[in-house]
Length: 309
Image (cartoon, rainbow, N blue to C red; front, side, top):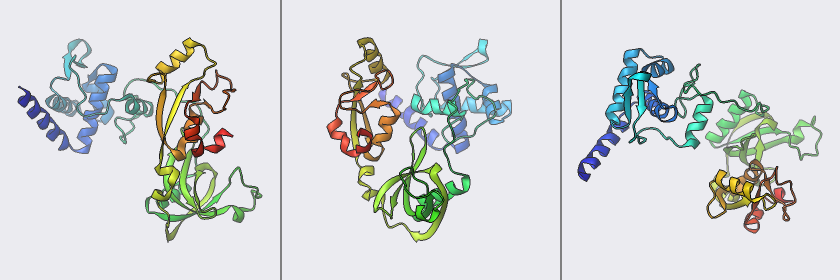
């Protein structure tokens, strides 16, 4: 019996591995739609991918061949609902993957973006200001990163003491190696030839950018705070009442009263900012606004001294 199950799994894996990208996209959508909304219909598949009803039916039949125990046809909804034995066969059903897809109206990670709500669930984003350069500047930044080239930029730093009109004084040669999304803005992580170190450059503060012919001489492996990961331990603010502390522990899936995270040393400060962590030694910040505090401050402070000052 166990041997038969093993053969079935191997057969399923082989079938999935042979799927074309377009087929896989549609089957992942079927699986996510069924699991998260409770039903997937032929018209859902046809409308989302611009297919005929016959083609949509073919995709549903293919999914049922690959995962025969996952879906049950229900006449009252004219579609398939997940069975009690439903198990992910093709898609990543984790909330970390599914929620951004639903928010972005994507059928799969990297998939198309139809005009209608493909999951039928509206998601309202905050009206945050756009903090990005124009597409020509961004293209130069990405090309330099991908092809390991030096990049000449005009950068207007908040810490610069130069006159903003004096562009040559803000001109820098950098060697980018990674894009960073903090959730509030985008950075490029790069070696700065002027200061001989690796730094973060906010994309929206780059007013000009040009890929140079010269190869970058640095490498991410020499960016110490980038390659080193830091274990961060947080807990609810001690000035909150017990009920609020318990709620936070549940909210962050804490273990033994500790919220444990791991982050690149270079990104530690952004993590603490994003989570609104009280970084003072005496926990003096407003606990209702800064609901978390650091447990292992001495261990992590060297990676982000500026946020602790």
